[in-house]
Length: 160
Image (cartoon, rainbow, N blue to C red; front, side, top):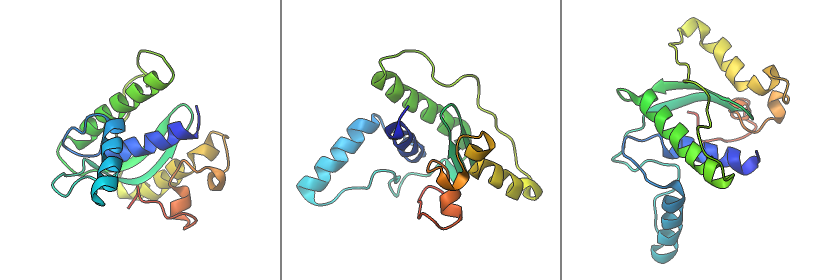
């Protein structure tokens, strides 16, 4: 609905990418800020602690008004289903509270398939330029994808 929803979704992709439950993202952010102020230290938001393993590694992404695409690698056994469950549940909870609504936000089950190396470049272009594919905006003008990172116009930290 607005840029803050996109920002929150991106925060969620980082925070829910760990094996351990994190609880409330709002509360975690608040406590981290309070900890930094009172002690001058704190673990940055968006980074798993050193003991936590990530569930997935991002290669490319694109967020659109009504759907999203990820090109990811599973880093732990069952990581993709666990990550998608946490992401969809956590973000739906945030969105429903913000907009005073109930029910599911995402329709249907997510689609997952293995990418052969020969298709990787084509799929990367498709994901990075998906805003252009759907005639929403030119890829270089759409801040909610990894395209700007790929062309070195932004130093994003989500994709490796």
